[in-house]
Image 1: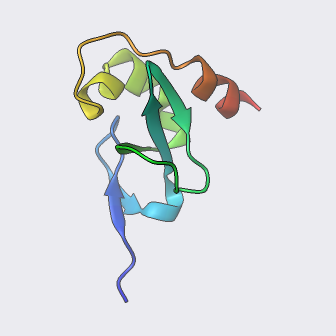
Image 2: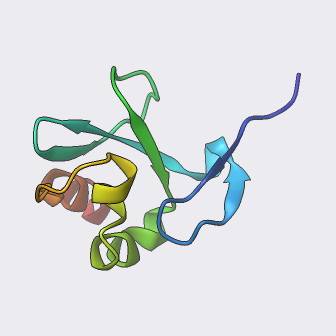
Length: 80
């Protein structure tokens, strides 16, 4: 069985999905999905690419929205 390959929303580098963090949008918040099981559209991100994703508005593009999304919960998760 082939290993799933995903692309980081910030740097666009393709990786084995185990190297990336899945994030989901719940309301207007971007939340980490460690178990890769939360409902909804997911996006994949290298943890080191968070700042680049935020700067480039990659979360808005990945979740197909123009509204501002809160990345605070994700930022707190990554800083722990």
